[in-house]
Image (cartoon, rainbow, N blue to C red; front, top):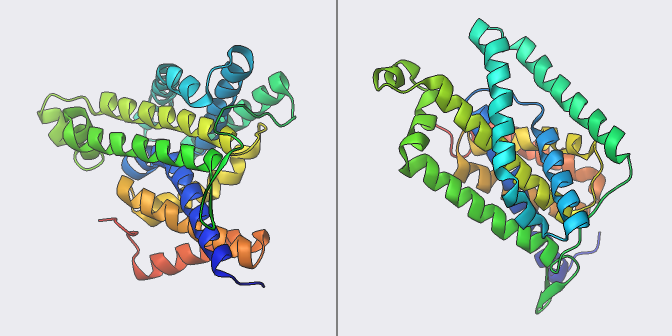
Length: 291
């Protein structure tokens, strides 16, 4: 192991930037899993769908991948609402969401991957943009724009989402739906409608995170499975349903993985980050900002 301050500072900066991306990937799961208690195993599939939507718009029409993701947000919102409605009618309404609901989302993950393989093949796809490639140099610290841009947009996205949850009636209803559905009904609010909105938002944010993913690295249909364990770990570590906690946990995991990969090798990074998760939950079972 070779240690130097330059290597250390660059590893920390790289970890912070990739942590910003992890926060975007996990923010939607914080809504569906942390607040609604829906174990959406298909969350990575919607991320990859967002990646391919950005790829198609970029390769065929030359649209910036982030702009393309914003344009298709309403379509993914509608898709999320439709998926929740099917889930509610088929499982949640009948009280069968625990095991059969898991099978539903696992099947959705598998079907999405197979469909993408059949249409796009298994070749890796990437996008082109002005910020993919250049790197800012601040002294001995490197800031790759392909990491910096998604990180900044991710933090802006989560800030907007936090404002919606804390400053709007619908946002407060989303926060309340997991706590007291009877109180919502007494206020003439339909909990199913609120949960449908929240789940749709989670899928829309996943599609935007997919655009960030294909900016950072080339993608193929099954690459989303690499993030299943990581995003659930970040969600739990940050505190169920806490977006600020998600950001803190994502950056911590990003920095730990980056330091481990830099000084000990990439193969150690997942083990160390999950070890950190277990150690933290042993001390604070509710997560960093959990209640």
